[in-house]
Image 1: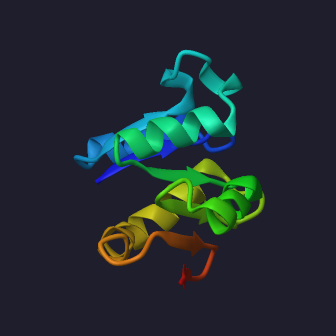
Image 2: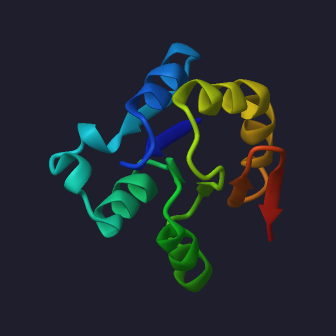
Length: 117
């Protein structure tokens, strides 16, 4: 599974995913780095078949209105320490991977994964 991590999430998340065998990039790796706009991130994600990981509700709105990005994991944890975010991924990564085989829009909060259909 491939991921692109948006600017308001830590680069550490991309490193953690890579260490577990996933293909993950952070917006810092794009030409405009963290100044990359949502449209640019969506183009990269959809061309490379990546799931966008973001806290930004604009991605959610765009997906609902236009179907882009094709696959989106919205992180709805509010402010969270990096170690706690990584723990959430440790707890949920297998289920996230499984859900994205069937669904395109998933929300993760501190206690559950929510599939939007």
